[in-house]
Image 1 (cartoon, rainbow, N blue to C red):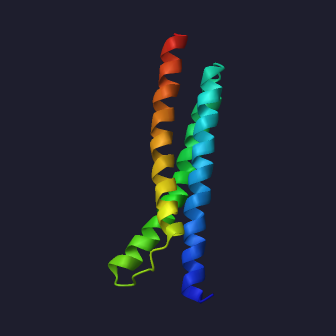
Image 2 (cartoon, rainbow, N blue to C red; image 1 turned 90 degrees about the vertical axis):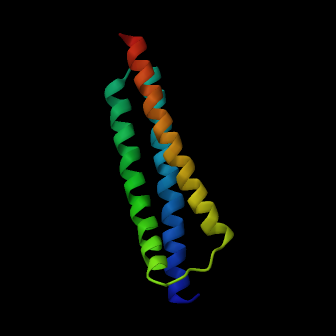
Length: 107
């Protein structure tokens, strides 16, 4: 595997792994809020945000290379990684709303 392909694969896997971790943390935030543990819920949302920042940094690297004329070969795995990241971002946003709802119900 060429060095460029290997770097693309590392970036793609970073998107998938960090996206998955963010989604898992967001789900744990909902579970904690459901149990009334709002401190843990908030911590888990922050943790999810950290994973999303890592994924976003990897994505920005790919976009910058593309903008500079270094066109990557688009593969199904690359498309999957982008889809996985966008789903994770959406899930994290929704988890924040659900945690807020549990907080309101607790008052």
